[in-house]
Image 1 (cartoon, rainbow, N blue to C red):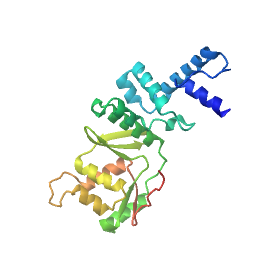
Image 2: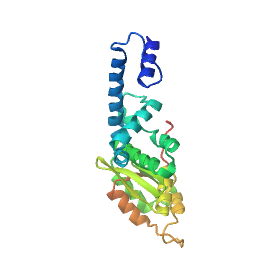
Image 3: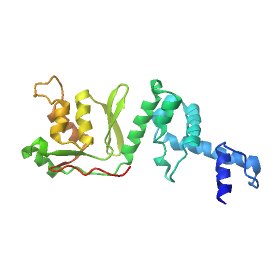
Length: 232
């Protein structure tokens, strides 16, 4: 039975002939394959809407089917399919095409929208008043991500139910990277060369904190380092 199933999968993906005894023969196989082709385009368009708009419906559908055959879904939830697309585009179109960056942005926004809910711990902000930066950690909400794009660093997050993004200056990106990596506030400030330290920079922690509260980046302030996830 498993051999028959694998033969059918291979035939559907264009890797082999239709297995003997398949109902409808080649006509049935063509119908199955047509359904998969349509499904691949619909499924990939959910997280990659900007990429679809950039390529056009026909070219995107062709990309989706090619990608499906090389990197088929591994889970029943098709919303989890697509994480390998940026790397696939690097191999087949090159970074200079701009398509990998667009795929990375689309996927990060998709992940942000699917991230777990996490409310701001407003009481923890009192730690900012009396805790030295070297003994304070700022934890960002699930879904916040920092992307290295050709045009510069980009921050992605979820505001309400929609993914949002904005470009960052180099100091802002250095600060956010440290927070995402679990560094203390002191280390993050040092990386950003905070305004007032004498360094030539336009980073302002007060302005960052206001934005972090308004745009729902920040989850909690902690007097101890956050536990790092060990999951892959």
